[in-house]
Image: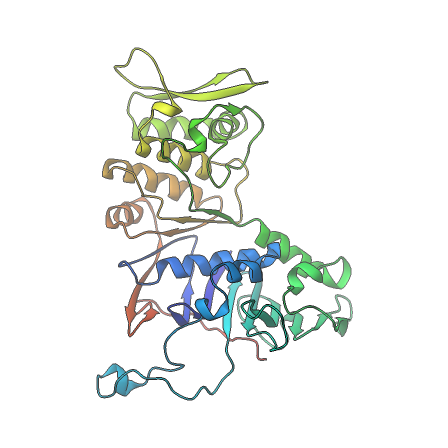
Length: 385
């Protein structure tokens, strides 16, 4: 489980370290930095997929993603005694992302590419480190990258071995140096990071993929756009927690039940039987809120839970009456995997408090910088360049 998330120099996150629990809610006012923290988690996941640099480039390049304020905000500025103004930079341009957990930790430091590089918007990976446990330490590091050089600590004798001295600044050691033997721990962490699951694009509009006829095939994991909703629900009913599925529907829509229709060998669909209606409703007929709730049911009751599931504003389109049902689902899912929820819905947060113990990270912005004033920051150390 991830216990610490650290971000430095990314958008409004000048220097933020927050704890993560089994079920964590990240909240705050609009513009407080919730989306930036969510994106930071996604960027870490993209590292394991080999897409970190490309994703940052798609955001407009490193210059667009970097903290836009001064390198430091003095007490005089915060007290209003001096205006906010630029200062002479003391350190290198840097965007750093990292996490620590009960088993492993990882951090990456990105900076500007060399001047002769033909793609100046692409960030360059300067430093990477992986270690055992929650916090970086001299003896806990087992993989280290500085510039183009990567070295791994031997499993048997603990001695360092140089793996390469020619790694591209746009490639991560996570994807290019994981191997059996000395790189086995690196390989294990890469696969764990690749298992992280994100839901922020579940569509419910009239043309949403979930509303179309679907092939009924084994689907233990709901797709990011919800296109395979019917198959995912059918899979939960077949090999997952069918009782929890029925309970989730009944709790949200009393007297209702789901029916998987169509030939299992061809296009099929999902129908919702509701009390008082003479026929069931197909997915194309459901309201946006009802469809979204069913999408969240399929995601959270997956028979193949990930190590980490992150949901961005899952309450969107939901009527307030459905938030207690969603909270129950989130609490149930957190018993099988770590869950992070980004939300500004106080009713949902209240319902989550009632459903079980949660870690709450409330963000606030001051002088353009995101902070978590009510949260005790865990200890954290960045790898040095």
